[in-house]
Length: 106
Image (tube, rainbow, N blue to C red; front, side, top):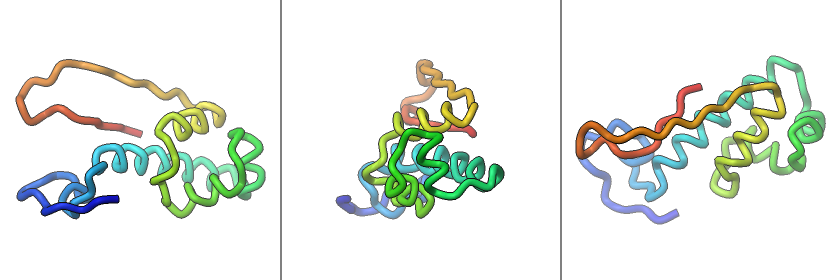
């Protein structure tokens, strides 16, 4: 996790803190928040969540603690699908030069 000088006036807190992978980390965080909400609302413990999602309990623990560096976007999306969620990815051209990036709405 390399840090660099923070850009001025960014909308992404992680980019503002200098994370090189800020967009991906932000996307993972949105998916992890949704996954954790589902686990909580269903009253699942980590072992039950691991069984339902096909992950290991330690991986579920990482997600529960938002330690997402070693968790892929694909893993998070598969876990959400296994908990009866629809995950949609939309690719579209940018309208402005600085608009390229990753956005996740949950």
